[in-house]
Length: 148
Image (cartoon, rainbow, N blue to C red):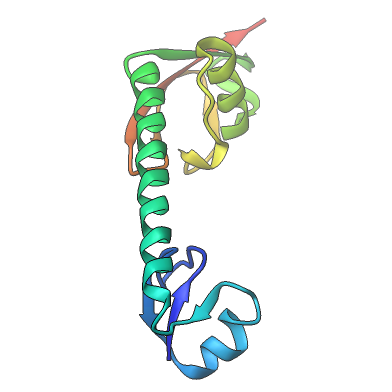
């Protein structure tokens, strides 16, 4: 069954795509949830309009991501944390880093954009991978310093 996607669906397609799916998937999931409509002869213009708006949104998102990346690349974020020797009392999480980035640079990023395999638990310089919308990827330097 051919359907026009009304929203992005992981592993299936993006908004505005006309795709072929099984009848059961369309009738039981996509159509009742309003995520797709049955593709008929008159849907081509609607699909083209959806793709155009999607492309504009993607370009705008990529541009804003590149602006944030230009602001953060080359800068070091200083995170004071309570520590004994090299070991922190607790840890520095992605949410802590996001708040400090906004406070120090004014750049707004989401904690889900930070790829932190595990919380930072030691004093020193750490590189954190940042993956922004639009495929913009860079390394952010976080310098954790002992406080008190």
